[in-house]
Image (cartoon, rainbow, N blue to C red):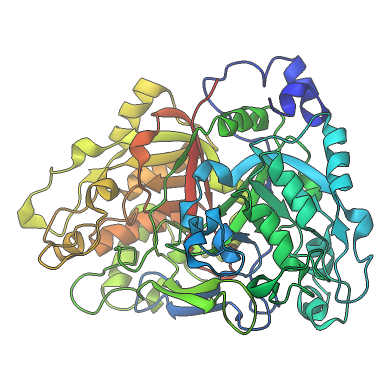
Length: 592
């Protein structure tokens, strides 16, 4: 039973009108202002990382407009930066290791967390009164009594499927523009200012004991600073006399829970909203870069919450792993993007800095399931098509002749409104195009034309503004396999080299048709929305950039969605000036 169905707070009017309680055939487009971004921008100018073994985020624009038709970046990001998710192995080793704090959930790295667990119904624990109310270097603590007060406010006990959000406005206050960068994390660690509010072990254990396995907070960490509440013996006593933060985490991990840290804007997210914290799907990582958002629409949120609590959530993301083909293969030899790399133990359980495990990633911004914002292909301000080199200039001249001037844009992925990343899903099955090209023309791909969209609309109704169109090609499901000696890599390398047919991809006319319908977000279960032919790919992306449209690419498992009726969500870490951005895509299925 959800908070909304108990007829309290924001959702009472909607339920009394019969909207949220009735069976919904389709989810609606969220009303303006009801999709709330809960993540700050990750910036090299801000100190959002941890001292003592961690490192600052680095964005390197290593491919730029001119010699290339697009721009892309190399990302070097510590997993414990800004908005992040902690999963049990962060501080709980697998029980077979015998290490301190080992336990049952110690094998559940973030890629193993069920996707439904990454969403939940918001219950806020109000800690604004305790903000900065502690000695320097010490955290004010969320108590069990404060959680019970939150339960009293909603008129019911916590339950599985809730997302408990500890709310103090620490990040909003101390991470705001004009505040010295050290105030957010470094000053507290140095003992120069009060630390952020966090729950102690007893509070985390109380919440987990109610079945809650998703918590979040607007502090840099759930770990409360200060003397531990418990004294452990032998190997368990490492730093326990001064490090309450370990206990704060273990109270969550004991129950198989995860916590999303470093959020903002909790004041805009009332009880009963849908909270979503989506980490990049990284192989075997205990913490992961994450983007958090909430849907507060009083008609839509209760319907989504009902489906989430029934676990009607589908993961549409490929696994980013070194043994899988997740980075752009490129045609020929030496034309690939920067390979996906992981440093799995920047800090480990037995390290000198702390008793926990964290890693980092080095990757192209188009790695795995990712966003393509307008600035990926759209012209940077001050750049003209005459600055393109070779064939690219000719392609751009032809595009402008056929479709109009290529527009300038600065819309990198951190500037894309989070409302544009979500919406009711329209899934267009184009698998019948596979195998329709002449091998003598390869590298080439079947074209998805406006006529294919119109055929879909004749069956399922006209596509409307705010909806997300997903092209179901079946390509990733068929070919996403680990490279093996003697077996051709079929996801990217073979199609790009002309050794196999390319994935179906839309033409610029198709993109313009969708833009005229009001669509601003298109997704595909293939490595790119663009064709394997680089000229055709550029044309498609230029059309999207001119429309202010985003692409999400490299989905998988799209066949699990109905043609109409699901709700699509893509979120990526909000990294500044990023011309792409690995992220996570999910869909919430219809649920009456």
